[in-house]
Image 1 (cartoon, rainbow, N blue to C red):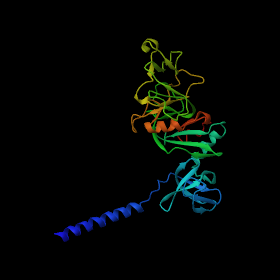
Image 2 (tube, one colour):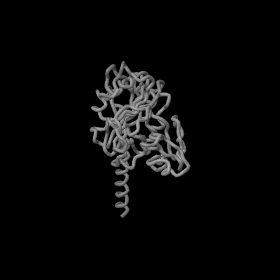
Image 3 (tube, one colour):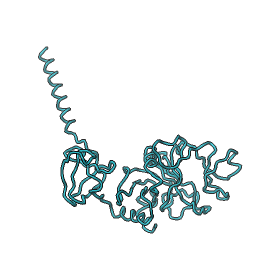
Image 4 (tube, rainbow, N blue to C red):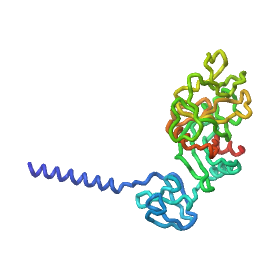
Length: 304
């Protein structure tokens, strides 16, 4: 019996040792997000610091896979561990469509942050959200790619009130807002909503496409309105669509806000998961003039 017990214990010990060895050899690097190319002979560092140990040197034009960026350092995989390449020593590889999009902002003075919302076709309701920021004179990816949804009837280049579509184009942001307290670290102006806040989509009203605060019965004042305090607007931001000038019937209340779900489109807004909305709002800096660009690659070709 003792021999059987000892044999069983020895067997368990072997299994545990094997599992530990597997865990130790498991790749600890994050998944590849994009490619970078060395501008000159460049050192990969053990940590995100110039004083850190050099793990390897790469020649000019060497292409590497990056899992992201932390501050001014790209994260790359080396010997199953994360290494770091100084941002100034590398440039990111972009598709021709991304380059075309970025060029649209090179002529917009001071615009250094871009939120790209792209669908594969004009009728798609599911979109990809990508962020870019200009750092050290070059466009770089910012946050990780996100999934989002738009209007239930897709994109349009000629939006009308109530059409259930999202407007193609390039727009700036106004205030951030929400029913919750302003999140720590947010640089954008923030307006906490109340039970008396409404966005007006009544085309007959002088208040069309404006945020109004009113303590009376809103139905007595407007034929149509949207309450600003509800669960999808725990956090959001106003997109400056049809604001200067406001044209009645051209569409109203276009926001970035929290989605109902990944397969549930909006009435015309852009929506994504709450954690993504928070990431975007904390990333956007009014001093960098953040803009949003919305549409498909083809529909955006004529947008300036």
